[in-house]
Length: 318
Image (tube, rainbow, N blue to C red; front, side):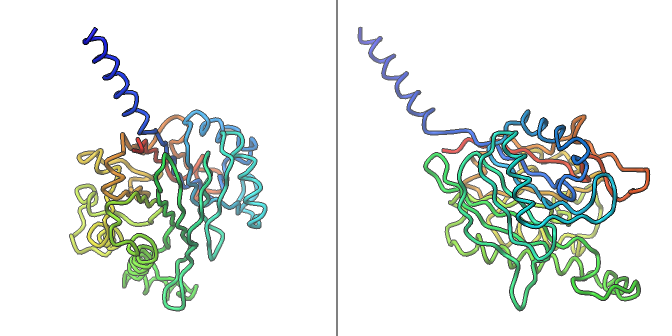
């Protein structure tokens, strides 16, 4: 009888322990010009694929539509049209909530979620610092915890922001690595306005993700650049100046995965040590749908379904 009672107590304790943690699945992806490729079938392949992944939270980079179906002809959505379209798409994969980031141009990030999210701050910069594609800081209440979500998309060019359009000026700016320098300034501003406002952030649950348009020194064996190369500036700042850890690299320290149609990893998910302990796995996904294929007909700078690959991170939130 005593053994039976002990067994019942043990089972009850196990049940209580398991009830204290809940799975959370994050899907991040730069979907290229509002999922340009998806216009041909009203985004069915895209939303079918997302449904199969069953994410709880999605972060879509470049969420706004910019071009007509299968062309490079301009067709820009308003913010209202963008949100309305994503509300319709999100319903297909079971997400009720849609949030659009701040942005100076037409390359915002957009969050969809099964759970309500509070938008804490929208970031486009100030008189001294520009955040070219905008960023946002949101809060998700999940399993009794607050999860801070920072999304971003940094400046993509080799030349600096605001450089005149003539080729000579832009080449001169790129030669001085002004694009790399500008990205690092964007990153400092974003971190100072978000995670660095919390003194104990490393003990809190923070994640930061996006298209950083820059490479990391943690992948130095792939790129073979000097340690002081300006292309590493943005991620060097994150790794040395904030509590964030590179989630994919933490799980695959000896393996390189490209996040683009080429051979670069410029899309990242970062997490604080407290949240990293709750990560079960993290992967850049390349499958029959997500593998980028260049459009070789008349729009060679576009890819199908995107010029980037998605990242999926599974958490067990305690």
